[in-house]
Length: 340
Image 1 (cartoon, rainbow, N blue to C red):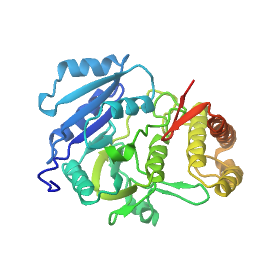
Image 2 (image 1 turned 30 degrees about the horizontal axis):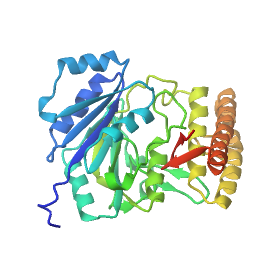
Image 3 (image 1 turned 180 degrees about the horizontal axis):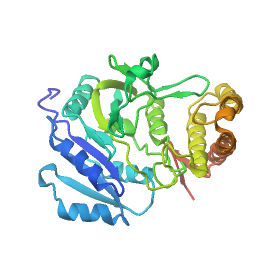
Image 4 (image 1 turned 90 degrees about the vertical axis):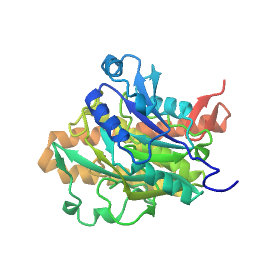
């Protein structure tokens, strides 16, 4: 009892997928090459996704012990929650269908969780390739020094794809490469209030912060790595192409998640800062002025959609908070469920 031999840690790999069978094939090939194989691999598929169903009809992957989980609700949140409900491992490692874990990925994940029983979540670097070209950290001077942080005034910093150096504690993990100890979840699920019909951006940010708020440690280790080939999305969010609905969803989701994880005075500062300044992704007034000469009408559209999303995010947060105070809703982790 208490020896490493007495405790055989089981690892589950969770991969949500939708209509990207070629990318999924690359991901599964990488999982077959792991120096420490997964004990189970869960592939979550939407019911209407015939392309993926046909892919598995022709490719059985008997050596991987795959389990297919079917969901009827669109969006990544529903897929991830269905996977968490079905997972049987002591550690649940999550990656995207357009990612390919490095051979030592699971071995290093297991080593981290064995070494620190206060570790609730672990993330690592995703080496992002765009049009076959690796995004080079050297073109982002200083950016790789800070990773996965929520600053006191509400600005979030990612940099998971370019961060180097030693393992360190963080606030936020990235969905393409994150893993969690089952006992740290304690009923936590991804937030179903997030908007979007596909990616539902910021779901990883919200989930990471919920685990950290529960008292667990989150660590980023760039040696726990995957290759990431951002693929086509089949929803309103087309990555680098502006879409007003996607912009509103982004601003809503980030605002909601941020308000959930700040102290009262910090929320006030965040609302003022995000309205007056903002970021390159979600415009405030300063960013509108900064990009107006270059983008003209597009900058105005981005700003209007950003402000609409900020307002909607505040409304969602306030309604949830008010209803919870009146006993109408019961909060489990960061997901709200009707108790009526």
